[in-house]
Length: 64
Figure 1 (cartoon, rainbow, N blue to C red):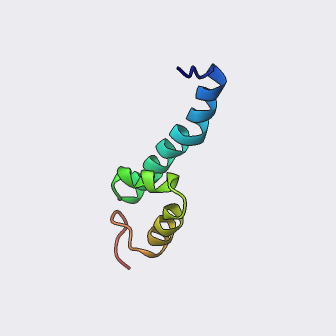
Figure 2: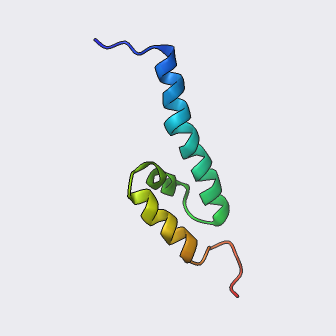
């Protein structure tokens, strides 16, 4: 059985959980569902998601 040290869990939280939480907060403020934050953790999918968010109309902003 593999036992992970406390250092491992701190690094795991800093590397995966914290960015996912931050992404979900930002995405929710933009008006998109917060589950899109998962896309921020998947390589190459995060680039596509960033592209979609950058060039799409945000639901919470008024139309120009």
